[in-house]
Structures are given as structure tokens and as C-alpha cells.
Amino acid sequence: MPAPRKFEPHYRRIIADIRERIASGEWPPGHKLPSTKALADLYEVGSQSTVRQAITILIETGELYGHQGLGVFVADRSS
Image 1 (spheres, one colour):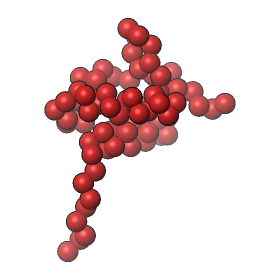
Image 2 (cartoon, rainbow, N blue to C red):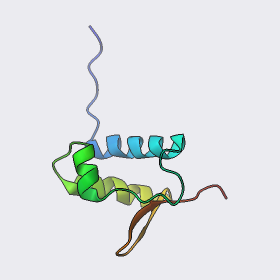
Image 3 (cartoon, helix red, strand yellow):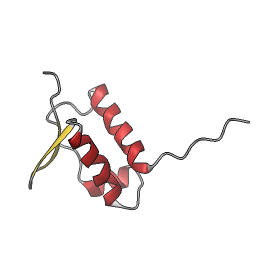
Image 4 (cartoon, rainbow, N blue to C red):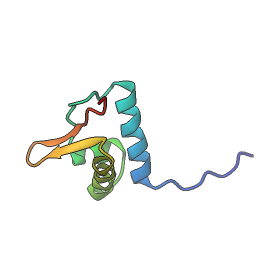
């Protein structure tokens, strides 16, 4: 019997997936992320606040950036 999996909060799963999409080049620097509603649907979470929590963390770490009224984008971390 496999060992039971530890519970992983939804926001961490979202962060991991966004990081994977960035690392793979699927979402390159400058790419505009889908809306929080679209991301909530994609990740099958009932609350957009869960998506916002993940995005906030990725903005704080410099992996994403936001422009008021324009959206959230992948940061260029090559420099």
C-alpha cells in the first residue's frame, strides 16, 4: 500500500503548476496570465481568492508582475 500523501494546499499546487508552465516555456516572459476566474476553473478550485493567494506569492518572489487594469504577467528573470 502506498504511503498516504500529505495534504498540499491548493494555492501551493497552483504555484507549482504556474512555475512549471514558466520553466517549460509554455508561459514565456511577458505572457499575460488568464483571469483569476479562468485560473480558478482551470485548477478546479471554488474560490478565486485561492488563485489570488498563489499569484500574490509569485509576485512577491518576482516571478510575476501585475499592472493595474491590465493583468498579471510573467516576469523576465533572465538578468
